Amino acid sequence: GPATIASQKKANRKTRRRRVRNKGVRSELKTRVKVAGQVVTDGDANVVEVVKAAQKRIDKAASQGVIHKNAAARRTSRLMKRAAKRSCQL
Image 1 (cartoon, rainbow, N blue to C red):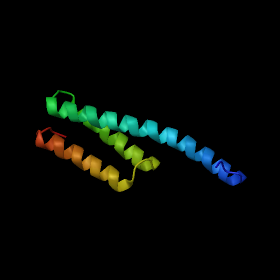
Image 2 (cartoon, rainbow, N blue to C red; image 1 turned 180 degrees about the horizontal axis):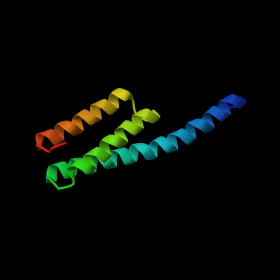
Image 3 (tube, rainbow, N blue to C red; image 1 turned 135 degrees about the vertical axis):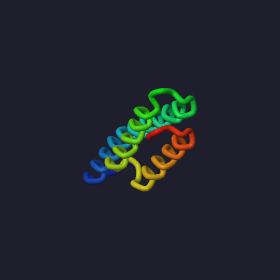
Image 4 (tube, rainbow, N blue to C red; image 1 turned 120 degrees about the vertical axis):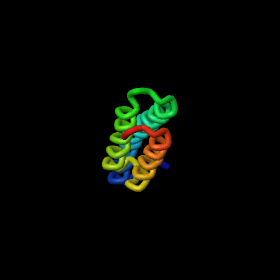
């Protein structure tokens, strides 16, 4: 049932707040990476900016603790690998 201890009530409130914030960050992160993937695939002119924006967001999410440091590294690596395959100059 619901928490009865004051410290646990507070912890639950904090968790809810964090979850909402993290959800927004994760959602934006996914969108940025997806857009970057599309741009790389289509070979648009503004590949560098879009990929950089996605990379920046990944790093920021890691520093905020939304995603793990290694998860950020993995995502960045995958993004760069895709960009490199399309021979984009980054």
